[in-house]
Image (tube, rainbow, N blue to C red; front, top):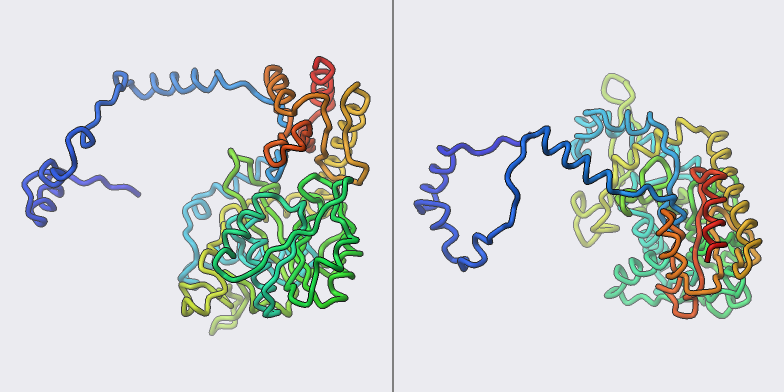
Length: 441
């Protein structure tokens, strides 16, 4: 609640600090910066302003979105925002006083339970800022477990994840190495023995990787564990409706960006970092976990436990100093997963597979375009174009189609490559419109 100060309040405050007016308080600021001239229109009434905003919004063109690259446009059941938007959830703060936050703690506990089932893992944290943060925290947990100073990552890890990892570790004395990729858009498994050493704490594998391709996770897991290296698996949570879970191929830590689970794209945020692990590593997890206990009357109660945060233990002993959870986004995820259930999630994943492969097949029938790199993919894939991808994006935007992500922004050699995504929201008519637009090029 916001309660503005009254003139009497302002007068009393000014007297307390020994000035006669706000202008006197701000006299140190040069006049040209103090009160800049703003070219504002005349004030409108509420209904006039509402009509004006509607007129501005009407100028927005509805785009058919084929952009993925880490944030995905999925259907969100109306029940998700209806429930998470209730006042007791929407206005709740993080549960520092556990006994006074039973409702919030219960939703976090349910979230942890759902994502453990989803990932096939033993334990989960209350969530993190985003997938990149969760991945980095998992890699650093591996470093603490092993005491080793080297982290090996797939070169096909999302570039934003790489940047976050580099930022975290810049002054920690750690070495980051990349396992190269093949021309088919998967990690070069043959380079693993030379890339992974006895100084490697973990290998970070992304499947599907940034190009949408699926990796041989079972084989890679066996190989890295054989040389005593931990495995951090980065996954797409929707893909787990049809894919093997990280727990099934023996990942030590499994993370993902939880935005596809009932959270809108919202111009790229906020995200939802999901971090799970084997039970053996539970004491290395950052942030907070919620557990179940009993009160003095024997009733079930929810409590914060293993709070390895700087606000709960001595800073130098904290597992992380930037690990607040995204409680409202996590609530959206648990409502979404509960509504769909295992069968519903499987159906959504199958729709993503169907739409993406259908689109790829149609693109391959367009002269000059080639879709896919020859490996299995989930809901996005690379399209090689006869001209720079930036031109394709510009020309399709004129037809109200967001064509995809220009891979030339990351690598000049891929300037003719487009990363295209098709989720369950893209209809057969949308796919046809996309392909027709390519034929026009």
